[in-house]
Image 1 (cartoon, helix red, strand yellow):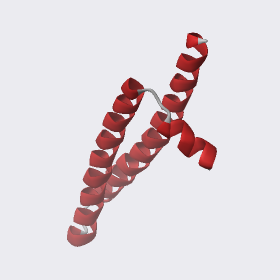
Image 2: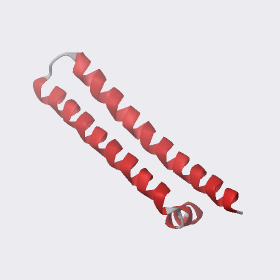
Image 3: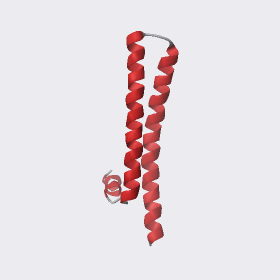
Image 4: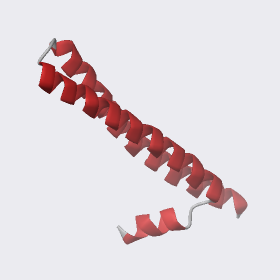
Length: 83
């Protein structure tokens, strides 16, 4: 775990900036999906609202993981190309 945290601390600034933008976008999607699911629980309307909320929620979680993995791999590739 410390090795992964050290990788993020030593990451290139451009890659880190792009990663932060991706994470901010994902958190906005998470808030949107939470609002959809909260609306579904209050109104108890059609199940379509529930499925849309769950789909957006899981997609944004997957996108968070993918963006973190891609940023680590791009950083590693960039370091290897400099050598």
